[in-house]
Amino acid sequence: MNYKLQEHEDLLQHADPLGQEYPLLASLTSLDALRALPAEQLPVLAAEMRGLLVQSVTATGGHLGVGLGVVELTMALHRVFSSPRDAIIFDTGHQSYPHKILTGRAGGFTRLRQAGGLSGYPSRAESQHDWVENSHASTGLAYADGLAKAFKLTGQTDRRTVAVVGDGALTGGMAFEALNNIGASGRPVIIVLNDNGRSYDPTAGSLAHHLTQLRQGGVPLSQNLFTRLGLAYTGPLDGHDTTALEEAFHQAAALHRPVIVHTITQKGRGYAPAEADPADRMHACGVVDPATGKAARPSKPSWTALFGQEITALAEERSDIVALTAAMRLPVGLGAFSARFPERTFDSGIAEQHAVTCAAGLAMGGLHPVVCLYATFLNRAFDQLLMDVGLHRLPVTFVLDRAGITGPDGPSHHGMWDLALLSRIPGLRLAAPRDPARLSTLLREAVDICDGPTALRYPKATAGPDIDAIASLDGIDILHRTPHRPLDVLLVAIGVTATACLDAARHLAVLGLGSTVVDPRWAAPVNPALGSLAARHRLTLTVEDGIADGGIGTLVAHHCSASGISGPVHTIGLPTTYLAHGERDDLLASAGITGPSIADSACRHLSPPAPDHHGLLPSRLSRSTP
Image 1 (spheres, helix red, strand yellow):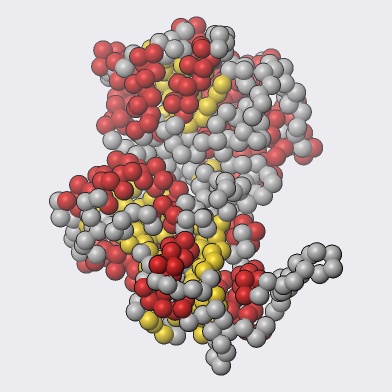
Image 2: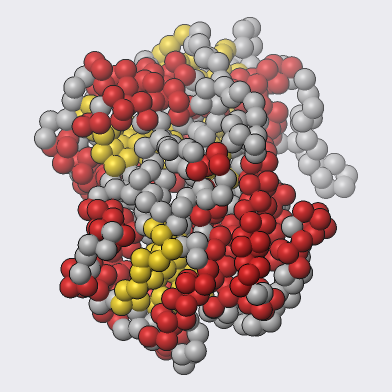
């Protein structure tokens, strides 16, 4: 991105309704106007910003609690530092909503996390004030260390680097590695510690205990973790006192050395439903009633909720089952499990790498660990899975929530890489349940496996009805077979794509083409029976909501080739690119993962049509075919 280093950037991008409901906010036409605002007007501005956040986020869904907690802190940052000349980094990025409001994007909150609208995280495409697109926690200090080095090496010693770090983000290993480097460097990195006692769940580990001691004033400087690592320390400060924060930031900048400014904030501040929520202070929410904070309409059971019920029931039966997560106990469905079995629940903080290798140790000790993560966050611990679990053939089960397209959370959260990554782990068995019944069955099968790791993955979505098999072949479920037709197309459905594949079979039948729809249940390694089925069809299409390049379809094609099966194998999946945020169904449709699109693809591969006289290839199937 080409950063325009202007201190007087025009920020007139507010929508008209902003002026009607939030007049002071609408009057701020630049960051200079914010800096010139009299101190007595800052509480009014803070109230307007909170009003806009509640109004917008409850209407679209998004991260609410932490943004409400950093309003005054963000105002103080932008009154002291000159963004984007001074680099301000948020770790994690869900703290950046007030930053977006103050940097010209307040009017865009009506389309927060919607296709073509504002991202729910910092976005370099949106604004030159957003330096990094981080939602994976614990990275901000490393970015800041690198920027400070770059500024020094290029002679830009008047530019300052500020990292706003949530206390939960400090539990990640990268944050400790960065503190180790920053403290020894002497470079002027200003670390603003946003301490609200939780990232999502309460902050875990001895760091949380140390921060509590700092808040209570019971730690001498000689025992302060940060000073012992070579950083200056100031605080703890009231994170809602803008005047005190501004003074502290000026003093930190004047030190010209690494410094921690420890601020205490209240997550969910100013919004009664969030303040009254003991679980997570409305860390994230869907569309809710702004007056109550409750869901505006009843929701169907989610995959996450169904998993939570099943793992708790399993643990009642088996005392060897333990559960691990990385600061996401409630989002991954471990609420009931942790309440029933607190001694068998382990939260590593935002430290996926530690969680995975810790699970290896638990398995070595005779237990069966179930590691519950978002699919996208498993990427961070791939080496640990490969070398610490896989190499030792340890019985560890990985349950990956938010697999495939997650929707409004965007490119950092789409769990679209897991199939390609996990299918390369020697000895790992990978399952993708298509419905609630298969989730229950496959989870039980997974924890019964004792000679290597297993993984289950499912999407961020409501779970549909069960799809019963009409037959089974060596562990493969046959979901559909067109009667009295040739075997033209074998549709291999990976997990929840079964619904689209069954729809495609109906469209193909209208065109006179016979098809078989199968669910291998265990997607990797490839079941040899799948090759036998492929050999009896003219075309095999695999359909998966992960990247097509290197995913399950690639494994099936390699298996068929190695087995001497000559029929073509093609994959329908997601493109190898960073997909923007939007509605899940829309993003899947754009990738061709719908019944009509799958059927259309099958027609093209079976008999490529000849070009017409304009050189165009006509579609063999209308998208509106019933």
